[in-house]
Length: 129
Image 1 (tube, rainbow, N blue to C red):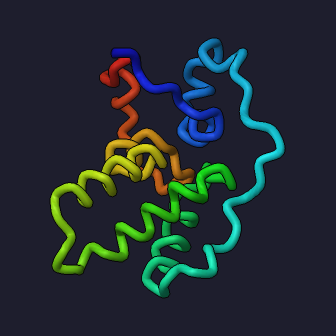
Image 2: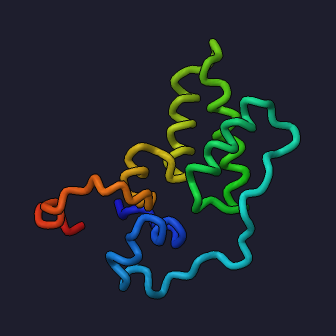
């Protein structure tokens, strides 16, 4: 199965667009996107807390992600409930992956904090792809 297509904003945030510029040359980002904005009015305090946390951690999200983000917040807010079973955990994992918020996706995004922890030898031993 082919790899899923990387969104333009995520490619720029992760550095993938710089690493493989030819791959993203003809790709067009969605036009007229707006920021994610404020949480929905019907959300609980826990859901709003998760909303704000995800928006702060995932700068590539925009208004087109609002519904998926809302579902993620609803599921995440129910983590401590007694009825949070395997199917809800799988749904939350799937949604977080689609938003680029899993630990695997986090390693692909450069956060730009510049703390200098990188090993200079890593450039010689890293895989090309």
